[in-house]
Length: 157
Image (cartoon, rainbow, N blue to C red; front, side, top):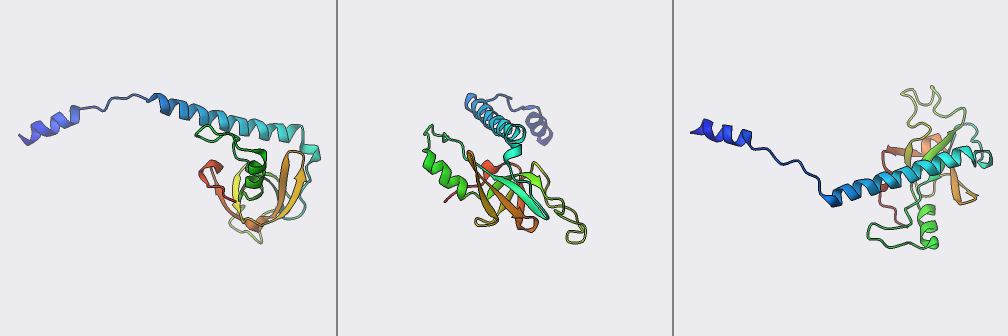
């Protein structure tokens, strides 16, 4: 009797289907990520000569900018977006100085690399205003953590 129950439970399969909302959510996240990548590529190619080049052990970090539209469909004002970007504690490493993560100070190796999303303290680094927002110059030891997706972190001001 027990073997019959186990063979019945083994043959039952969970149907494999996707919900339309899940597909839409995945597509929206993919599109938003693509916009972020496109913005980063544009910044690297067109605006790179305008950006300061970090010296010594400093990193040039672009703070994370929230999407203009919330998940519920509300559009955020420019003032709100600017305040969130200024208060952001996540950023994308754009450039690294020549002495970042030297072997003597960091024998385990670098904590991050160019193109990584990092978390830093709210008031860390020097803020530099550029066309379209700001960038920060951080010391290499001011990086607190690396993350995969900055959208996973709550950005409050």
